Length: 188
Image (tube, rainbow, N blue to C red):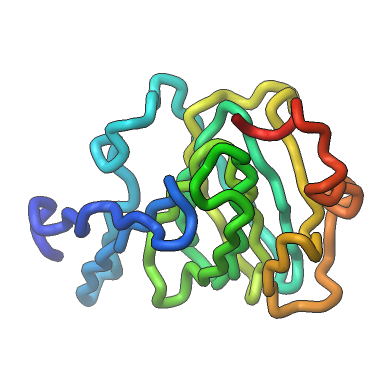
């Protein structure tokens, strides 16, 4: 396998669509024994306080859609080590230069990237295959106090998920449209 000092990916690349979103190209190194990928480094995101670091894993069957969720205090960093997901993002920050902008991208199965999602950007994904998502956050889980949501199919956001009838949790089925969210529940 290639030496560790050869594994540094290119620097984080800012999204051209949503301010504050970054992708990190992740290089995979393979040999007869398997693969190695470095997926996260604190130094890739010097503007984030990572003093409360928590890592989570989500497994989804093909056709499951999770989201759209957003946080007022937490950032997320996503990788997909197994399967393929289509990610939907929407900027819900009224003060952002990209307010209401949306972005769709695919992660996994050959598209090896890390995805940094800042506070106030709604995020979700639909599993195109059975998939595993690993995500790192900068806040410990707080019994849902910073768990907010907006309807995955909000026509005012118009995210093209490429799926008509995804499988949703009861919580995700009941998220309001953006126009129905009280101003105090939106990110600043």
